[in-house]
Length: 238
Image (cartoon, rainbow, N blue to C red; front, top):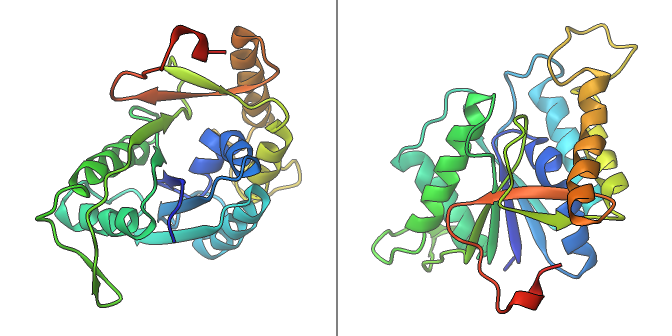
């Protein structure tokens, strides 16, 4: 199945927190979007890997993703090496996305930066003919995505571009809160973490609102790039 967009996250919920509104908008425009989680989030303070799997499935349904897979890398300990790169290359060649979304280049959680570099490197390597991979006993053709964009996570990184997601912020909140074990719950008896506060949950909206304010929209999501963003002409910007 060829996808238009393939979104990678180091943990289940990364994609939702960073780019859920953009994904929901693209799905509404008829784009086919898939999600690949690198780990099961088994080191998360709250919940469990089994519960995260259920939550991830529910979040994908909310967003309209046509597929979601988990590569089962070791949470906290995966590395950017040949073994892990090849597994991601297989996913890229399997789904042949034009656009790849992935973790922030620099962030509080060490897996975010590692995952970002790992996916970015694999996107390049996937386009090399002499790297041979197989899936289900069949040789895969080389494939390199046209664009790799990094969503913004914990840190307030200055975006290189923003997407107007007016009308889709509620869908993002629904997808994020599908991970009920991970975020604000006044009745929870589990330990507090930096993402379980009401302030963090509120920040999902007020950060999107602030980015939207800067472009004259209700809400927006920001992304960074590794190469220049090009436009056909001066009037193609909003």
